[in-house]
Image (cartoon, rainbow, N blue to C red; front, side, top):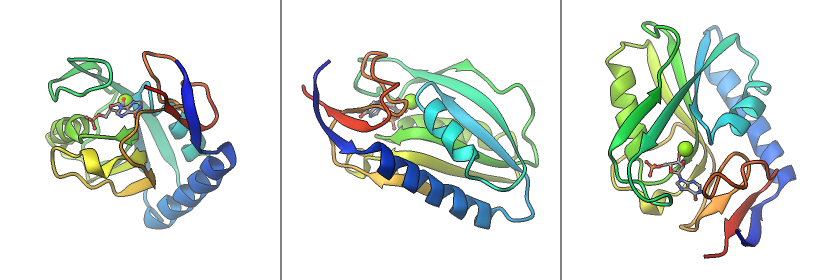
Length: 172
Ligand code: IMP
Ligand code: MG
């Protein structure tokens, strides 16, 4: 994999994540949060984010996989790992690495809504609004980016690049 250029530096990421954590803290005063991390991409962001949130919270993980080519989402979603616990009556914050077509999260939100949470919000580090195929607006997002394929800070290209502390565009 060849990188084109860094589009979000490590410093910018940490600053933005702190702001997001502060906003979430304000919005969930007097509530307990249940944070759902979507594996694997959101693991890095989620572990930074929860340390910037100052309300009591629990975490759990879900793993979803879409059929199709590695850099395109087909919209057909398979659940590889479900939650350990029930979420009925809980305040749910779904944490994602990036919202692209929106198909994955649309499927996930429908699936979670059936379980009757008290509330359900979406927090994504990156947003590519120009690629959307379904209407979906994240409640919290770190940065909106243009349509290029990016790696780093948990995001991968064929499983590589998740450990980079910055977000970089891949040369294609
Ligand atoms: P969608 O919103 O259903 O199209 O899919 C979102 C998922 O596609 C994300 O959770 C990522 O795993 C993956 N994805 C989309 N764009 C990128 C990218 O630029 N880099 C790495 N993964 C991406
Ligand atoms: Mg993902």
